[in-house]
Image (cartoon, rainbow, N blue to C red; front, side, top):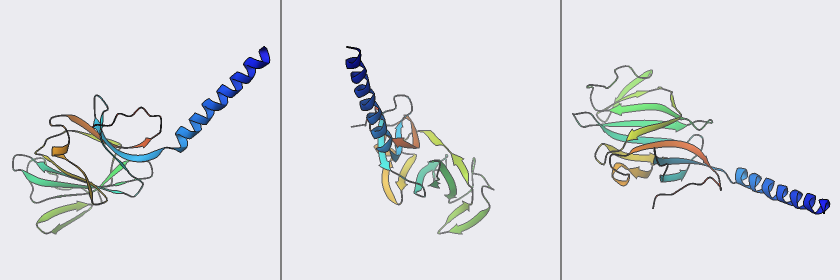
Length: 167
């Protein structure tokens, strides 16, 4: 009887270990936009080191476009490379990064190298504009819930991670 339980335990352990290994090896790196409180996923797309993220939004009372350019590093952090805007105003830095240039009416500040593990914002159908990964549109402010606190992060998605996808 003891041998029978020992065999059952061994089989159970092997199945459990196999599921663990499968879960780890099935992991995929993704860019995920999700609800800060409920963790409900609104956008999830494959992402990898070196991918480029564009985040466009409308800044301040003057309603000027603000563009942010990031890349994903080996630690899955978002590295802010460049910001761009058409004019200076309240809240706009005058000395971000080490390189400044003007192109097509936009002021660019580059070589910023600011690290973000993730970022959080209160979404606005008006202020949040395009969010692109490698030039492909993945979300717009109007496609995310209005006045909702959302996160954008680069994460490992595993097969058994309990994710809930927004429908």
